[in-house]
Length: 262
Ligand code: GLN
Picture 1: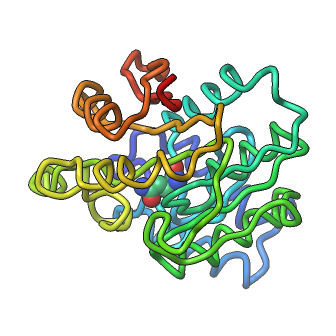
Picture 2: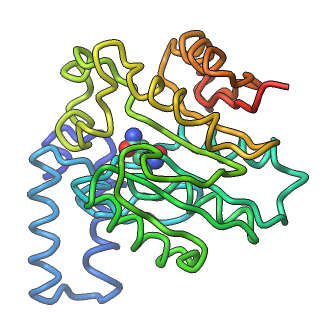
């Protein structure tokens, strides 16, 4: 059925669906068969595999997805690698971390796992994302070190942080319609649409970051294709210093690292 529908990796997908939904029993009981049926129906209707399963792996950890959360992407792991590179000497300090537009919480939670003394705050406009991220922190063993709340960027936050992470919406509004159907129809628009030029979120971040970074603190931002120069310019105008650009596995510049100007 999956093969006939034109799904490229049908053997892999069928195996994942069966393993996940049918459990290890030799025979399918009625409830498991119904779950599998429902999952196949959704997958055949075009819903991405990980949405059907409701869980996506990121940085070797499992993250629950919901309607209000972007599916974590392997490209975003570049931000975690950048944090590990630039904060290697501070790995065991009680750093404070902030994740703006946290979604599933993947960036904050993966970082907290790598920095065992750190604590962090994740903020998202979507209450659904806040609930999902809170559950994901518990699922990944960092609930005592992570807090999440609903909000617009840093509004109402007085504190300063040692590391600020963000994978903001960065697709230009008129390009959202041209995205792959998997993305356009199943990832929340709020998490994708970066306004007319794709840079609206970075302008908000440029205004917010300098006043929320501790001395020696770093901001690590994800960007889309071709946005490096524009985002660097926005952050430098706001008084930050561009320290480094990191490429993802596809060779695209994906993560920009900023600190305070000297
Ligand atoms: N921080 C989350 C992620 O990287 C959500 C990002 C978003 O919704 N734009 O997946």
